[in-house]
Amino acid sequence: MKRTHVIDLVEEAIHHSYTYQEYKALLSHLLAEGKSTGHEQSEALTNYSLLNERRMKRLDKTLAIEKSVIDTFAKTQKKVIWLVLSEGWCGDAAQSLPVMNILAEVSDTIQLKIVSRDDHEQLMSNFLTNGGKAIPKLIVYNPQNQKVLNTWGPRPSIATKMVNDYKSKYGSLDAQFKQDLQVWYNKDRGQNIAQDLLQLLQY
Image (cartoon, rainbow, N blue to C red; front, top):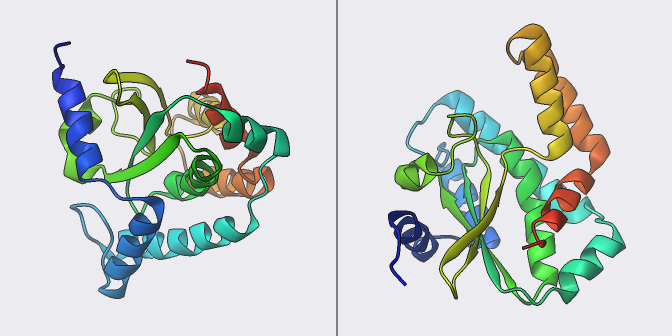
């Protein structure tokens, strides 16, 4: 089977990817130097990254995904790689990655791999959302037959509807909406993300 350019980019990204624990360690190391992941560096991005590091640590300890979802992931026999384009400063990624990690950990057949969006711009350009490089972007990849089976991101389905409805009414996202979105994330506690990811098993 002839490999496409996109598959080459996916394979290259996997080769240079981090596990969830490695990704968190990288983020902590950079923050200790006053930096964030990605090519752009600023005080604001570093502050976002600090907030997100605390957020991921909290979610790692407190997330309680529904037992039916956990059981389904524990039983799945489909071997795939979840390749995620992310950055430490991304708030949506900080909400999603801990959920992805829990579901991948209970499965014997799902591997979670994370890469920097800025380090893989060509790959990112093949998985845009409405023409933008929105993250996190999850690529479901079957390494056996070298096929991209599905994608997900940058936000869970309910949050995506909230964003679209707000943009339709007000034109853009402001500070108030971002605060409201964070409140929703806190209340939802990863359940919508888990349900969305459950749908990705239907391939």
